[in-house]
Picture 1 (cartoon, rainbow, N blue to C red):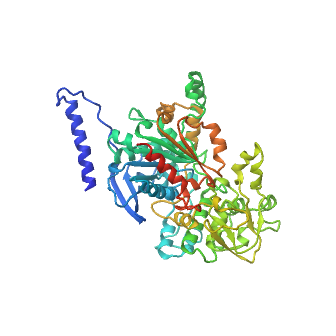
Picture 2: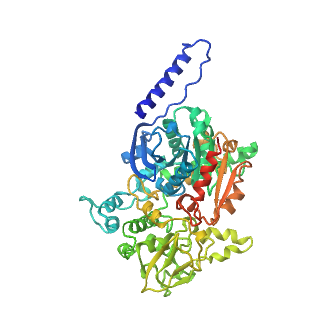
Picture 3: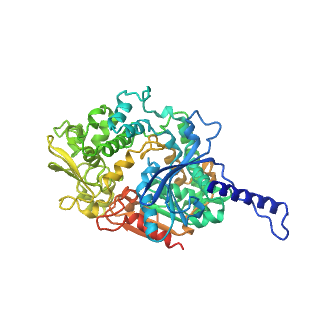
Length: 582
């Protein structure tokens, strides 16, 4: 019914534009017809209904250019996860507001499952009916999901592990192996311009009238997604800046800007930087196309293909068999990427890191964990050695622990001046590692940490069961993208450097997001605010909140109910901001 109504609305609008243009209505000046989305074949698959909120996956046919290299049919579609009240209209035009969000580095749409659900939930509690759309980048079409889908059906996480790493066939077919940069020329067509155009086409299709889009859309992003949203604001779409499509802007531990050092405000700087950076940008794009530059992180420990796959598999195991003793690491091969990632995230000292555990300290493979505990030591803020992917999900239990000093103790971040810069390494928290190879380590969830000497309830904000469920996701896309395109990063760097020619020629505006209401949520325990607050000045009239005890990822991954009995502060504050838009 709603699809029919929407088609009638579009057709009526197009007919009116034709009549006006032809002078069919006397006394009324003809107006330019509104753009019509190129997206077709809208499909919506309902995934779940939880606590009065429907989650569905919406996708459209939006083919890549005809000259794009061979690619799966799924890459000719674009989509998002949609969260809406179950008792509301199914037509997004009827929503009071729609939050549309760009994901961070490597993040798939399900990366934002918690904040999306929690924001709609908070809005309902505040008397609003809003929707939240977590966008999936086009490159999510290349996600490896078959093994996850199969394991979720069988209930055995080792089915996925053995499919991807040990030759187990599924329906008679074996995994062909992880793709390399040379295997992925289609990623050359999935840079920043594609990401931004996909967002615009989704907005245009779902809410066809510009006046409605200008009232309803709150454009936002987490981490890298905030930067992408800044470019969306200043990108030219059919003769208008992207900011014209949004009622307001929001950033989760990030900032919305396409010109952080205001190069475009000074004509001479604009010309010089464009003359220098523009040609360099063209060289970089050419480097991708001829395989001189890598298209993906590939084998980089901690950031590469297998590194994020390890985290997804750990989540799958914790989701399907949370309390069972983990067999994940014993079923994974020894290779530079996996072992390097385990060493980077788990090494307790510099000596252990430098020797790969051969100094007698061993590696995570030498200890016993439940599946939930293994996931915890890989991502928790009191365990993991990499701050940007930490979450406050609880604490180790079941055995003694030892202090971690690699790459530095969290307490060093309390030093004046230097301390803020050390946050980017391993975060600000006291970190520990298992110390008894015979003990079976278990996990205390975020709401069960009272009395743990190295943490406090106010710094544990994410439910590890939610994180495990999200990481376990298969089709339509994973929590972490399998093949994140590095071109998105180089495109952003070129734009920040002042390139305004070539692919950046459509970046015709600057600072447009600052003309709209802005909301910024900083994570209190994150390394991002000290640096970002300096490089990206917050708009003078922005609503700025700090989320005490939250880590970077916690801004989109916190539990619905916090240890102080209050709702997720990130979602609640965003919902309050939206309600205040009137």
